[in-house]
Image (tube, rainbow, N blue to C red; front, side, top):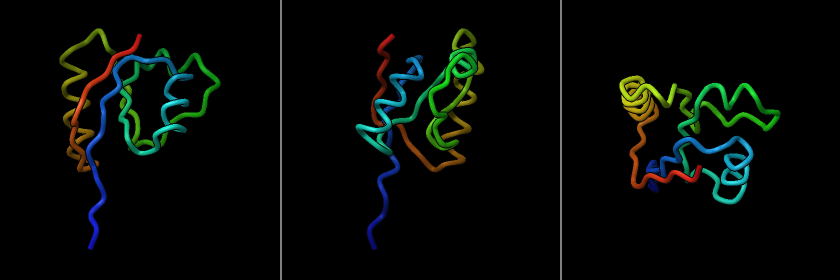
Length: 85
């Protein structure tokens, strides 16, 4: 039986338009860490719940906790980190 690859590139703090582009070009390859304010100020489609973590990027403790919980809940792992903005 083939097991799906649950590893993702964690894309930190990019804009919703870039998130949409990455999702279309590389489906199921990225996990987005997005500031809630960015998500509220856009008309771009929202990623599926397993594709995005919303957390205050200025609060390192909140970010670490949110990422840890998301990875455990969705049985994912991070194999790289990217930050474009």
